[in-house]
Amino acid sequence: MKEAYEVRIDSIEKTSDTLSDRAGLTLFARYLSKIGIYSLTNKYFGSMRKSKKGIPIENTFKQLFCSLVRWHIAPSNPF
View 1: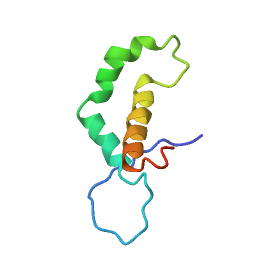
View 2 (view 1 turned 30 degrees about the horizontal axis):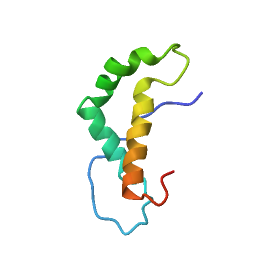
View 3 (view 1 turned 120 degrees about the vertical axis):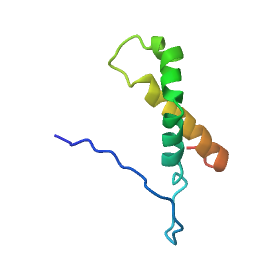
View 4 (view 1 turned 90 degrees about the vertical axis):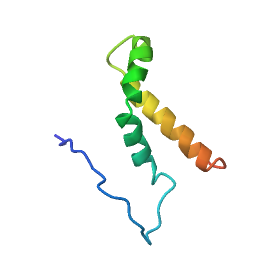
């Protein structure tokens, strides 16, 4: 059985490593969580789910928001 754990980013520093185009999405997703956007999406769109078997509506919007940001940064390769 897999153990669930949470990765926390404590600081942002300069690096010489090569970063992928998804490097800032973790910070962006955490920011959206801290401002409460996912609870709002659940409030307004949570009733769209017909069954609890699918992915939570918060995860759907998290993927949507991150995809939109990623596409905006690198529009030549949106996915």
